[in-house]
Image 1 (tube, one colour):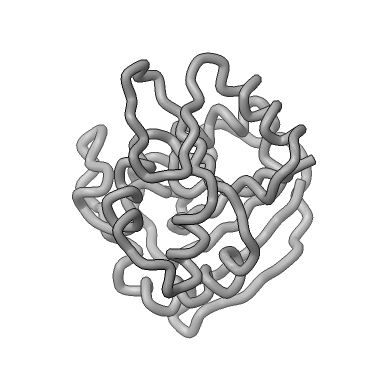
Image 2: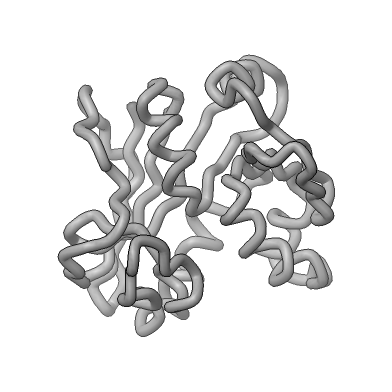
Length: 192
């Protein structure tokens, strides 16, 4: 059975929308994108070391896939991030029947997302890791399909934006790993 882990960057007040740039996700009038940029170099070194060392497949919402594909599909596999992202299967959740996922290997998930992800978890393969994909995460949380939270909390408070936990999460989480950067970004891994 495969585990499903979320790899997510959040502010202290739980916002996960647009950490990398203002153009990433301006939906709902969000204008504070790029809030993680001042911390990025040190954090990404930690992400590579702690969350990308082992092979994994990606489970992405279509919007996140569309953001990742142009940045990674043309990169040579000379770094661990490029190897993991390019070689792993990308499972792309979309409601568009005509969607063409050109960044391969990729498989489209449409229709009953919960049933499809449940079947993926029951099958063989490496860890399933979700990057970004806030709306998909809400579906996975509601269906209790998340096994692990790999969170990077940034010392930033925004007051608005899409949050990791849009609804209360019931149950206890067990801390399995914790580390901080010199700039105060705290990495915490929790298992259900």
